[in-house]
Amino acid sequence: MNGTLALWYQSRTQGPPQTEPSRRSSDAPSVQLHVNLWRDIDKDFNFLDVGFLLEDVSDMDRLNLYIPGPIDGASIYDLSNALKDADTLNAVFNQVAVIQHNADQHFIVATESDKQRVIHHVEPSRDLAISPVTVPGRGRGTTVALNTAFSMP
Image 1 (cartoon, rainbow, N blue to C red):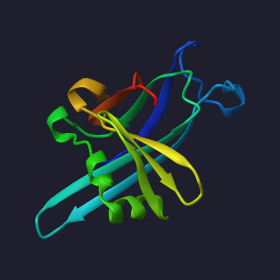
Image 2 (image 1 turned 180 degrees about the vertical axis):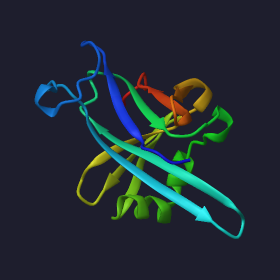
Image 3 (image 1 turned 180 degrees about the horizontal axis):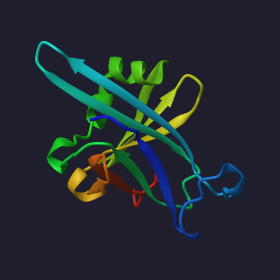
Image 4 (image 1 turned 30 degrees about the vertical axis):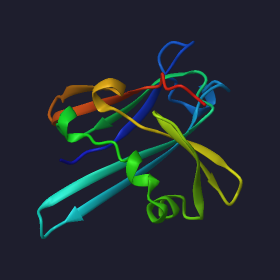
């Protein structure tokens, strides 16, 4: 697999997403994309770990990620439970973080900087739409769309 990752959102109120910063609505979400490639050469496997830090999502209907290779739903795992481990949680946020509230579909994390973040559990078969994409001259890719109908605490 080689190529480019793409990330875009679909608005609840506007037409197609705007790609030029000068045209973006003030309601556009703020997104930080975190991508890690974990490789274990001895065991011959690789993991692509993708995380999103989203803010101002009131106008976001869906978040889409294009991956330049074939992916099936059975290959996607929710890593949110791994974040309940204190060492892992602190490593991800690069500061001391504690779980303040734990619910069925999410948990709330607080950091030393007094920021609170909601970590959602994702059930791939329920929360994701996975679509193969054929790119002329490049082969198959995959679009993974995150439905944003998560309940906010």
